[in-house]
Each structure stands twice: as C-alpha cells, then as structure tokens.
Image (cartoon, rainbow, N blue to C red):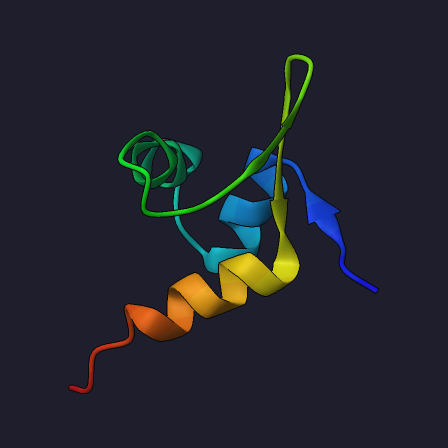
Length: 57
C-alpha cells in the first residue's frame, strides 16, 4: 500500500530541504496529489524520482 507524505516528511525522507522539494513540484518534475489545500507525495513517486535523478560519482 502506498504511503502519502507531507512536503516536510518527503523532504526529510529524501534528505533535502522542503524548499528544494517545492521547486521540483512547481517545475512539474515531481508529481503530487492535491486534496483541497493539502499536498501529498506518494512514497513510490518520490523513490522513482530519486532513482531517475541518480548520478554515479
């Protein structure tokens, strides 16, 4: 079952600031679910986003 996270929770899970996450959402790079005034990020969506932006060192 998917877990829905708030922006601060998703940012903590990704180890980035909530501002960074909000920029990605505003740019359309990270899909979110909006219900009323609430914004939620699915854990699976965040994991796919992180994997797609992985860079080898």
